[in-house]
Image (tube, helix red, strand yellow):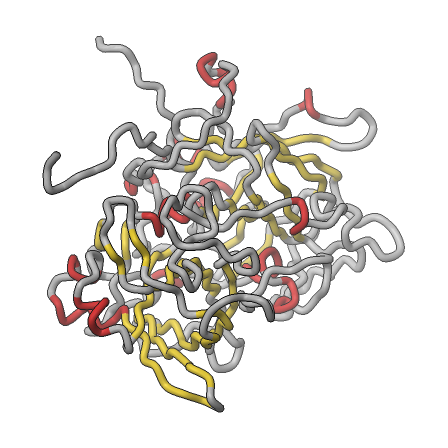
Length: 260
Length: 208
């Protein structure tokens, strides 16, 4: 399995470009790379999947716009999961840095956008009142954080590597280690929730949730490679995870369906 | 061979899972971690507009309310203006209204509520008038990619009849799945909605 291709490998993407907001419509979402709503191997989707065709809407002002967030919405420890719930010491587990860029389909960084993340602890247990897995809660680990991307779309946070855990789907279904990501973008149509996986995890090819994705390359792009260059010697390993949101057109000409 | 276009591909969606609250509404997961939290309360005492409650459920194909679903809403202010630079319409901005909130369903009843204001008529870039509406985004365990829908208001019959999006819904009998019903409770307007994921009254979802 190939880990996520480094998006920055494309020299076009490193071209310095002043950020000028585009505010036309978004590119049509390519739904062939997303999991279908109805994916019976992931049993929870059976009763929760719409069966009628989606109604396609060209982007209106309601979808081009979306909530705007700022540093005022965040606290100083929000991107440090090793410290943001520590009570009497550090959480147990492999210390890691997760970093990357939020880009759009044209390769531009998406600046100043909110990225939220949550995960199980090193033993695979979530701090959630509905999680009853026998692995223990870690008193020093909350398991969530958030960051705003900088001017180039870059984000980073520090955490411990989550553990795999069993779940009720088939009798012996296990989730690969993963971190949930929520990303906003600049408009409602870019809103995305996904999950990041770790290079080399043998549970990846047998995960009923991950394999809802019909496109092999799209699945591989959810797998973060180990990034030794970004590691902190004698402290933390690093994984790189770039996230691509939908591209947006410039409004060179307004759409006038009735003619000129 | 023509020149390559070199577009990147959008990152694939994955379900938010049953524990979405941890990251997005940690208080519902059962703990307190952030200094500042996002919530289902969109208004401050200074927000302009009529206070309303949105109240409803998301219902699965067996008729059972989802009790682990998370909704986000995005709406214009009372003057019909979105708090975003890409809205270039003439309505006044309201500094006390971001226009966005998120809420989780009650773990027992499945009920979801938002405290907000009724949005105004929206004028799109082509000059079209759009009926007041609230945009909704839905994620949960078993939902593989977030679902987009809208809520319109039952007391806006004239504006709804002329709305360019409602008029795209075919057959017309499905338009009612997008309309929240107004009632009064303790002197305050409550709009009730039901989002049906399947069945004869399946809600209209959009590919936006």
